[in-house]
Image (cartoon, rainbow, N blue to C red; front, side, top):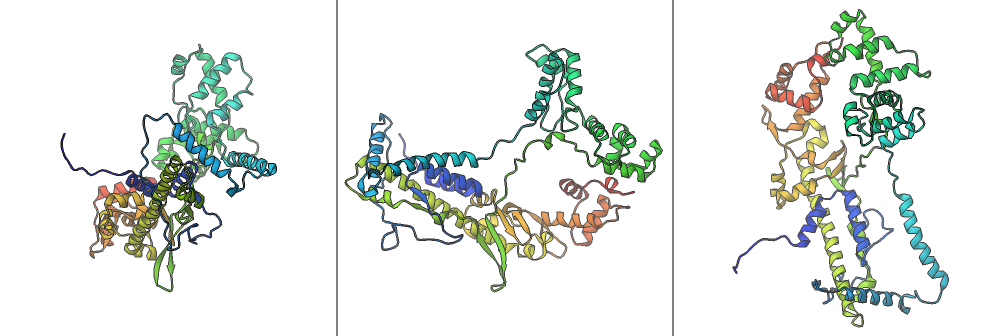
Length: 498
């Protein structure tokens, strides 16, 4: 035995941190889940956005009176669960009493209650988004209508199961043959592959990019609705023999080898740009979640400053049911029932207070961001300043981990567009004039320099270093090259136009 002092996280603190880190849509799901699990928690409907209504059943002094029964509920590990059934029976008897007028003998009302429960479930099922069809399902549906010998049909099903999400068959036919539980002949796999490659979308089951583009060109040539503007002979030659030259922008070399003018090659490349390098992504639904901003930043002319409006704040509309609070204070209600209600009321209060604390913390962090990044909202991304999280944490008097949780997966709508809140926190450098600039602002300046260059004679990385130095930003060449790659900007050779 020993006596020691340790710092522990209480369940309430853990819940508060979890809720602070949740994005807005996940918070709404959490609230819905808590309302299903906690009978005393209710959501007030009909309140306008931003309108805070007083909580129902509040005491005269404006604060909610806490019953003495709201003490910690100790769960007996050796209990057989009889007390749980007993308290549920008590709640059922209370709900069926004359006070709530649910046992008045009105059979129509009872039937409508059952129908309402059924309708809620049906509505939930009808409002649930259907699962999108997968690429394999899309191909197998078409494969059922392909006429081929049974052995080839079986081989085709095996091939379809090996096609990845981008639409490529990256597994050798010999490996498919070895791994198959059913015997498959190699010639049947080869025959099936040719048939699978004729399915929709065009280019499916290709082994590499070259074969994928050639399959799409074959499909385009057979399509009678396609305008006769494609030089299929030249396009096939470019794909078959000069993909690397196209990547490196070597138009003069291609023109010399094929005996075609640069203008003809450029027209052919325009047609190739309509092809899809990942045909498998054309099938199925986009799983990207919609972005819901947590706050709106707007300019108030009266105060001459940027103001913050929190959006979709669920805290004011959550409250504890007055019916259950009355039961909690009623001494005639069985003690196990009051213990059950006390535990749920306590959990409901913790949830409401955690949501309110989440809103307050996020709003304080956003206010610190708005005050520090006023030049960004006034002039644009090039004027973004470095803002370490530790400085905001010191300013607000909270831990830096709390700031990190507050900005995680949060978005704000600004006069400049919708941005992730984390974008405004970054390191930076100092210009020759002594002005602090974030790395994102440096990237924006790099994009502007490349956007304004002469495309017939583009700037290399050394030239960009000199251009930035003229603006008071001293960067190494490797740093410029790194930022250019991050921004997906090709090299000067690849940017050159002929």
